[in-house]
Image 1 (cartoon, rainbow, N blue to C red):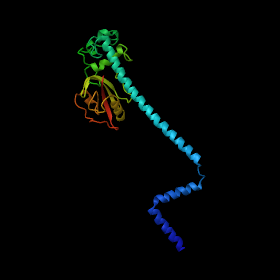
Image 2: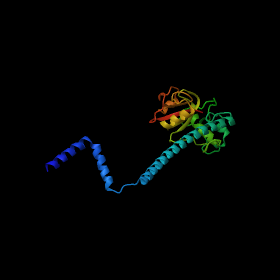
Image 3: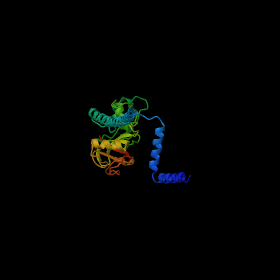
Image 4: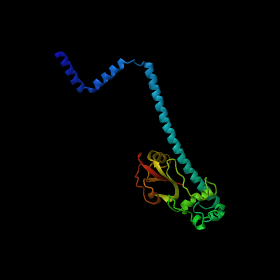
Length: 243
């Protein structure tokens, strides 16, 4: 009886000193009490797990690539439409000071806008905030492009398109330290912004022909980006890309 108690005490002390060993022995004992898996069965299980992990990772990569391609299509599509409009009419969409007379939709007798509300000033610059105010050049740009069928929709609609992350897409003359017209994409996730930069520019939010900031309103200014010299994976960015 005394010997049994001594063994119990020793076992208790050992379990306190080596808990991981005790846990392992417990698991091993449990496995022994059940029907064990053969090496072939273990190999099959590991193969299935590996395949599932591969499928998941490949799926994530495909989603990422699809979003990148959508952003690139939006960027190139807007640039192509803008240049096509300029080539066709010798004016920029939104800035066109003859739009009210040029397109029948603005003089068909159905909610026709005043010329001052649909025409630009013809100075060669698409002026206004990138989140466009009503009847501004950055707002009328979308109407003009739709009126001549360069992008889908009605010429009465100034609705700005949205990118694959749900952020607004806008165009204006200049943003941050970029001179000339830019396309701005809102709410782009950090990892995507980083890839876009690395593929098309210098990798930094505050330099080059692609620049970004955390704040929507700052994209209308002409100051250096507050995002610093590198992208954060946890950040959401407003990206300005030269048109």
